[in-house]
Image (cartoon, rainbow, N blue to C red; front, side, top):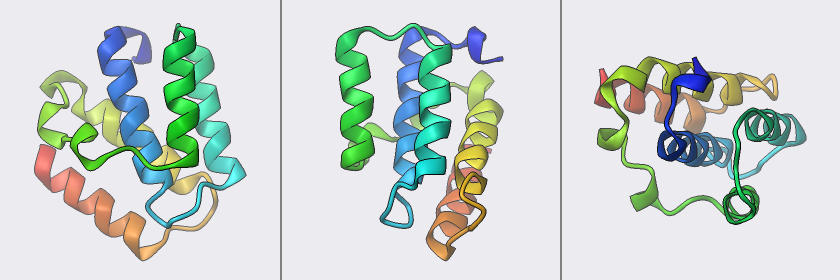
Length: 108
């Protein structure tokens, strides 16, 4: 399914995933691994790779993660991928759960 995403949609997905990695105010190694696995499956250029690395050091700007900009046909994929980042560290913080629930409500 990830291969169906346009280049722009892939970057948007990475912004959301990084945003959720920061939901508990810390990006853990397990979350970083999920992001790097996504990076490997996408064909990103140097600037895009640098952008993702910046987002792992500092969360994406709120205006860069607008749920209404997620394409209708990819919303379920975004939710499933974000769920993977949330569950990757074995702990679901209240912030992660609340943010995911809000995103789910906004895009369904």
